[in-house]
Image (cartoon, rainbow, N blue to C red; front, side):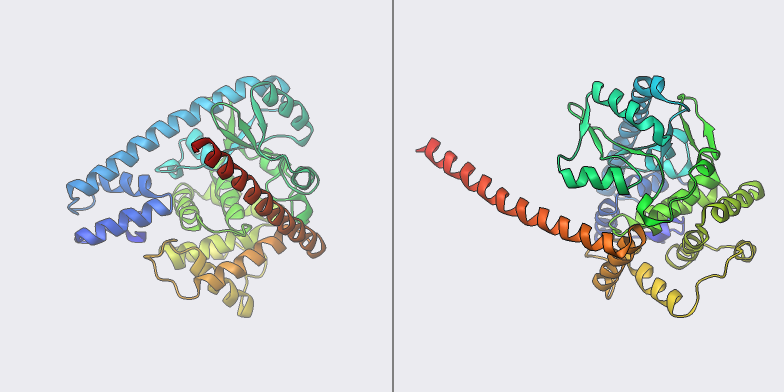
Length: 370
């Protein structure tokens, strides 16, 4: 599948290989992207069997409908909160790609809409969203405290009818991590769109995508996110102005390491050729030795396509190391211990009370049937 995403097409595929391609692409939220490349590219003579073709066409139709809904939802939300904003709303990540018309929007399906706004505007915006039908997606007192005191966003908001989920951010990584940047650098890195909202300019969009990926502790969609970075790189790789801005922004916000990791694993996982002059732009020492070897072990495995058909040795160990690494990046050790204990306790309570509720439900059902 990596070959198709980089337009390195095979000569042919057997029926079993077509089945596996569709299964793996769908599991990694990439079937519409693979479909778009296969159906719209004239660079290959690969025969697509009718059954595979039907799956590809259906995924493209789903993507088109989904993107139309995203644009409609963003316009609707903006109309309801614009009066509470000091500055224009910024749309991030997948929804941002769609609104911007970015190459990374191709085949991109996602579960929520990410918004960035000034922290001082959040109380007013949250009230406006409540009036518009959005309610908190969690009723846990601990989760509410965690988001509002330690995180870079408020608890997710879900529309009570449409089910749309909004992630409202005031920074790009948790404040408690100690690495949350001066967000003004990103507020100054935006462009306006035809929909009345803003998105990050291409260089900032690439950097934010890299930060989001390499600050994560969970990599279910890691292969897809790396594919996003590959498409975002296409938009800036030959633009010296954007490349210069990319390194300036990374240096000013302290994310040169995440930028390096993005380039390294685009090379190692996606076989992207990164020009040597790119690495010469880094000002801080690049990772090497044991640190680099550990990174290669972790990300070489967790960023591979995620499916049982893709055999990656020691993937489980790499996922566990990535999980620990991500949490340690996001919060100090003492807070991590407290957070882990709280989450474990919540899980135990939920498991016990859930079993009780299920038993009561079964008992009521049995009485009703009798």
